[in-house]
Structures are given as structure tokens and as C-alpha cells.
Length: 125
Image (cartoon, rainbow, N blue to C red; front, side, top):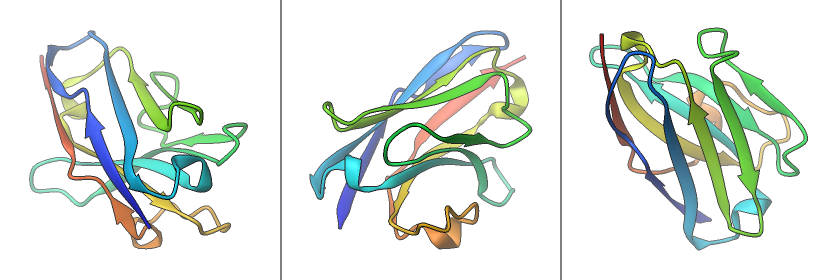
């Protein structure tokens, strides 16, 4: 088990940057988990944004954020970070970090048993 806590959300203008952090507040260290960021915009389903493997050597991104977002991890600090650059209004959503032990590296939210409470990102155009 792991309890996840996100931070770093806020309100910015289009073109600005934000950095989100996900840390393991309790339970097994974050280094034990594959971690993904998902986001959910108002009235829409939760969607995959980015993923990083346990070692941090492999990352994957949704097409909508590729080239603008970067996921990284510091296992010594027990954190996973999502650097979001060139933000657009359509990036407005609640962002969640999620953890799984599944080696299948799921893209679906169903593959992640552990979730943070979410952090709001609002991008004005």
C-alpha cells in the first residue's frame, strides 16, 4: 500500500509553466511503484497523461502533452514530478498521481489501485 499526496497546482495563463509533485505520505516507498499522472477535466472522463517506471528510465506520454510535459522521479526524495510547460487552456483539469505494481504498465485508470486526492490546474487563455 501507499498513500499519495499531490501538490503544485494553481491558476496560470496560457504559455506558463507549472510543476506538480507527488509524494508517498505513508506506506511503501514510491520507488516500489510505477507512477502515472492522470487528469480529469470538468464533464470529461479521467485520462492518462504521463507515466514513469520504477527506475525512471522509461517514460510515456499522451499525445496531447508530448513535448510539453516531462515526468521524472527522485527515489531518494520519494517524489515524482510532472513539469508542465507551454500550458494551454485545454490542460485545465484536476491532476491525479496514481501508483501501480502492474508490470503490464497500464494506461487505463483501472490499472491503478492507489490514488492521490488530486490538485487543480486552471489555465486561462
